[in-house]
Amino acid sequence: MGGPVRFSPRRVQGLTRRVVLVAVGALLVYLVARYRVEGLPDAALSPIFNVSGGEHLLFDRWFPALQEGDTVLFEAGGSLGLARVAPFPAETERAAWPAEWRSAAAGGESLWLVVDRLDHPGPSSAKLGPIPTSAVRGRLLLVW
Image 1 (cartoon, rainbow, N blue to C red):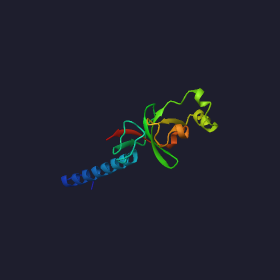
Image 2: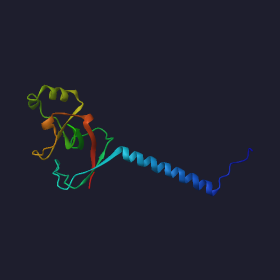
Image 3: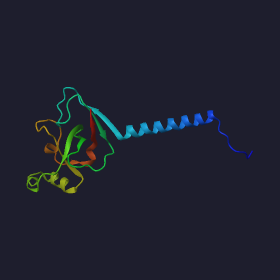
Image 4: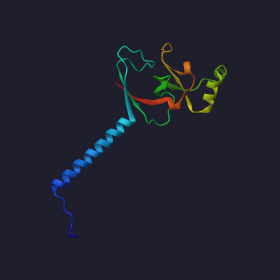
C-alpha cells in the first residue's frame, strides 16, 4: 500500500496530452477575449490615412492608457468609428463649445478623437465633442 507511485510512459503521455489541450484551450480563450479583428469593405473610405479599404485591423481590447497618436476603435451613436487620439483644443476654442462638451473635457474621463479625412461622414470629436473613454473598444495594433 505505501509503495512509490510509478508512472508508465503511457500514463505520462496521457497526462501530457491533457495538460497541452488545457493550455491551448486557455490560450485560445485569452486571445479571443483580448483581441478583435475588424475588416473594412473593399470600397470603404477610411477616416485614417494609414488604413485603406479591404484591409484587416487587429485591435487590443485590454489596452493600457491611450497616448496621443494612438488609433482607436470606438462606439458612438450605435455605430463604430475609427479615429486617432489627439490633444484637446486650446482653451480659447473650448469657450465656444456647448456646456456639456466643456464639462466632459474638464472631467478627465474623455478623449478628443480626430480623423485624417475631414470630409469623412463617420463619427469624430469634431461632430460629437469629447468621447468618453468607456466608448473605446480597442487600440489598433496591426493592419494587413
